[in-house]
Image 1 (cartoon, rainbow, N blue to C red):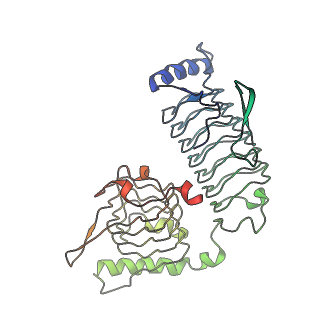
Image 2 (cartoon, rainbow, N blue to C red):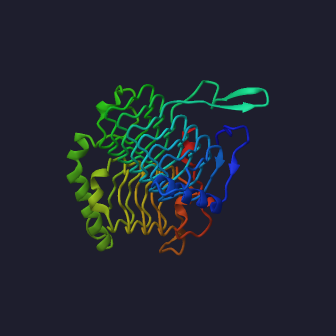
Image 3 (cartoon, rainbow, N blue to C red):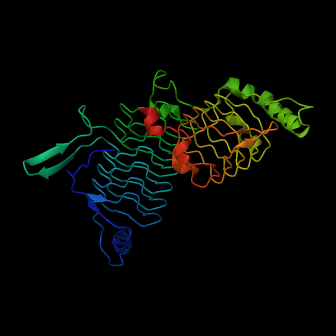
Length: 372
């Protein structure tokens, strides 16, 4: 958690108070009277600001941790040194927004539009009893915007100033960086599928650890992997008398996207695979093995995951709505539990799952802790 940039002077607002302020701002934004909202130095943590017309609103130095801004119009808004950690900012319009010095660790900006946004480093100053004080985030000086572990799929950064920005672990599938300024930006472990790498001006060394488009070698192996899936289905249907158990350990299986949706994949072995964004919705995955796999942005909605293992897997931004995570009864009368020990994810992802205990007992490590 960042330091309070205003020396403990943030003003907490209730949801009811905030609604009244935002209603008046919406009238202002559409020239129907009202009043421009001044929400600088406010504590709006975990409040609902979704689907609002918040054009030109001021959130300078405010805390919007865990808040929802989903679908809101934030054109020309000011987030100067605001704390937006884990905020839901999907489908937002952030064109020309002032986001200097903002913290966006763990936030979801999927499909956000950030053309011409100002994302440079910044420090906050405030008046203290002893005069002007400058609050910095660490002893090394100001930092650029922190997008670490954010979901930024198809986000537009056209002409954005991204000096010192941190995109470590971010999901950037299809993001547009054309014309943006990226000096000293970090992309460690970022997903850059569908991104024009030339726009990033990164060296080969800088790209180490990043996930880019599938290699020609992976494309050549597509037919073999597809045959393994077909054989696995035969193995399941025949009770193991035909086909063969599918083992895809260590493979990049992203090209199988259209072949796994709703498919019976009981017992699948996919340890240490690259499976970013795969759609396993509705799949039968009892006893499957995903240990160490990169499953960021994967969809397990409604999947049967009883007895599956995700030890050490990265499930950041994966969807697990209504997935079955109970123990799997075995023929010998015992039960195999579903294992998420050491998986990188958040308890909130399991809110609607079928669990036999609390999500806090799963042994997860958060994306932010894993990056530390």
